Length: 285
Image (cartoon, rainbow, N blue to C red; front, side, top):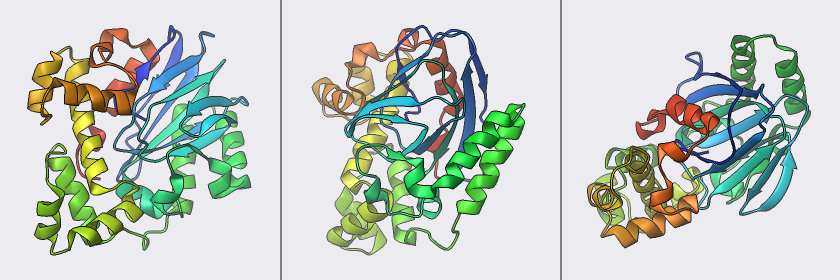
């Protein structure tokens, strides 16, 4: 789910909470409930985080993405290459975002197995997810829901299952450069061949280094576009060859034009989520 999500719908009447300071390192948790009956309808751009969404109101989320349309009580999505749409008539959700480094030890599957679409949480954790949804529904406060979610994640965590140090270093370099790093130079700095870096990075992060750099560069561009800066200026600052190059990447990751990415176009719930996530995943995780 995107650090700056592209929303549609009225977005009024939301009970919003987060992010939780109690979340483990490399993760953040927020919560939102539709208390006004407006319904949830979000167009969500790709981001540099792995996202888990858990619906606890007894309803399903309708997700349209590269994998087609699914009705789910909860899902995880990796680092997708395409935008997605999430709808619900009355959503009540806890959402967790994980750096891809952190996700490697929590999910129990290879990042590449997430594919380009969403994966139902039951496929990862079975009946334990249904029990968590029941507990979240019974909880009376967001603090309780965040504590339950944190406890669940702690039980799933396998700290010994971490990416290679070189992969972690490569991810941090890509983030720090705003996606403006050459893969060949990156591999050389790590003492690896380009082929080895490409294979190990993709298997553990979920994208090739080149695609990851594209994604990070796009996320940097989104910050400028949402702030209302001219697309040509954003393209120059974020390392695009020209404005047309920026337009192509925005179309890939957000299914929109740069002009459509403006904070004034977002409904209330999308703006709240954008402010809550801030730049959490623009720093190493």
